[in-house]
Length: 388
Image (tube, rainbow, N blue to C red; front, side):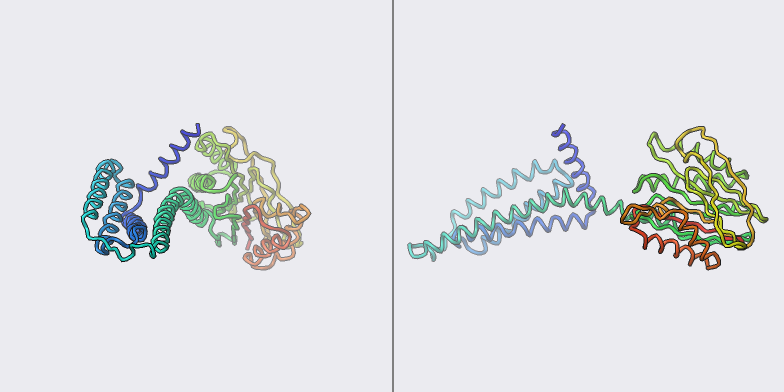
């Protein structure tokens, strides 16, 4: 099993190397050329400077060119190695034969230069050895840790772009309702999303929380947002919307344990707002007339867990100045050093104290209060809907 794993990892690294574009391949070949160029000069030291300098330069150039060719062929055309290796051996033999007929420098011959020759030989051998080791260690790093780092960085950048697309800051004003939403992911790719959609008869606002983080959660978030917008093109209640979303997500999640919670409201002209919850915490209802808050709660399954789950919606009376606060569990579940959660009661008090403030300022007050309470460990998202 270990041997099979080693072969799979090696194949993965080779697949990465073969995707190098031409400019990167040229840089890699230049690295090999310069690294092996030093070996010719190290050999000159090891031979106590006996060869002519033009021969040292030629030897270094040929050795470097062969090393660069071997590297490029390994990356792009591995079969060419079977031709390059014999040619390299022949070139090395030819160089040895040429050197044997050259006039040698005997300036350091003699017993009085014995210590100098030994020191030069030692320096040459150490230079050659460390140069080769450094080159192969560099290749090993690039092929293992470097590949992993590039893969992780690519995933993080893609996740950050997905996050910005699926959970952007939200500002809307339509049909007597003002909406503001903000999401604070705990990492580059959180699992929360928010949206406000004009369905032709009013506006539907929701927050969602997908189980997990990273690219997989981001892809599932995209499915939720796309399915929600598609379902809202058809007239119907929030009960039907949740049922449609649940069926779609259950079928497309491909057997994984991923699911999503949702809190949504449909705002139309008039004093009634339809709301529904699917595994999400309560919606906070701020009443401007009394400056108090209450909870709109509903025990229902999250989306995507069961194929035929049933959902219900409710109605709430709204007056001008009232606010509906939809939020994911990241805000109330922030813990302090003693493990005590911030809780919905404190969030409700903040909404009651700042109910007349601009929605953006109210949202910042909620986030700031949780930051003072404890460190963020989960995604935090809030959507505020005010009747104007």
